[in-house]
Length: 300
Image 1 (cartoon, rainbow, N blue to C red):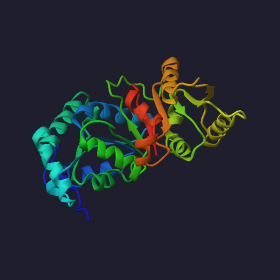
Image 2: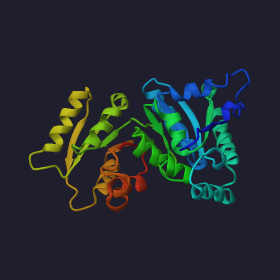
Image 3: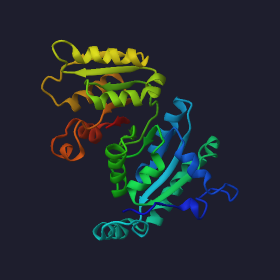
Image 4: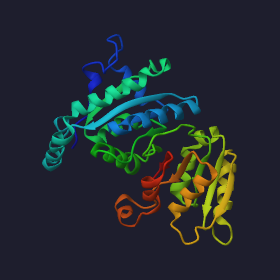
């Protein structure tokens, strides 16, 4: 049994927050936001915030931001798990210090533009799974990293495989903007790909250009036909293109096509199998997560 996550906003205002703001307001805004930037790792704070801000603006929706982090003093777990979290303090400092660094980075980002003044940072520490459930259960799109510290990796796993959220993963390098300039969809007529396109419909409708890429289509053109039918059913406009991988890995073929066509965002149905089978057999999603220089929108 896991104890409830602790919210710093229950006891004191986060940095930059005035005492006039009611204690539960930040969390209420966070839970009901259309797009949520989850910030478990200092290195990806700016990319996550920039992407979330743009994703919310493109659909005329709301954005929120929340720190999320494991805290052994606020979780009920196996002794081995708690010991592992305590050992992190030697390399990464305490959970509170990790939060403070992320909060400082958030405030730096916030001060760059006056229209960000109404944004505040929620703080949820304790068990990662419970924090993810608390912060994200109503959010349409979550922006979070896939790599980084232990909190980032655990958050990514819970979002994708347990909460099945539509997830926008920032690129490893700097994000240059224009998220929906050209969205490239990697398509096969599988349920996880279908669920991803349906969940991302609002963003696809707002995109300047949409291309559905069918790699190694069947002889009867099944991939292209189902892609065109799906676009019609969702009321979306886009091009459907078929290419041959020519014996190369599919992930590599997707990235090459993205570069050649000026894609600004990739959308895929992530991990056809479950998590543990993907560790053994998965190739395409892991390749894209490791090598893509574009934001990657996905859902399991």
